[in-house]
Length: 130
Image 1 (tube, rainbow, N blue to C red):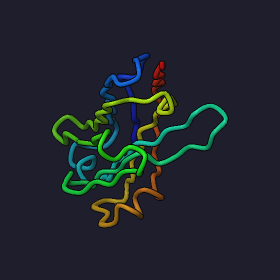
Image 2: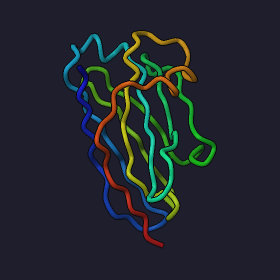
Image 3: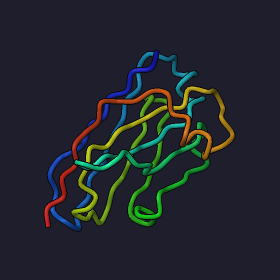
């Protein structure tokens, strides 16, 4: 069982920045380092959408087009933590942001991981004011 807890959300003005964190517990440190991790978001009245994914090693990443160049996903396997650095935030980025894990060890496909997340956090709210 993998337990994911997000933090770092809040209220920020348009153009500002936030850094989200997701701490994983449950798996051993070795297990976490074998999981691809991702960030998703859901705005009120909208479906949950993909934001970013990072491979188990951190060597590969992929982003939704609407965040490319503004958001950066990274991970620290020693701390069992994944991050989402968000810059130049826009009001349309307002949403609950969820961390997710693909527990299939050493997944070689970011696309497969993106659609195969099997553990989810409860989310952290990001509100961007205009």
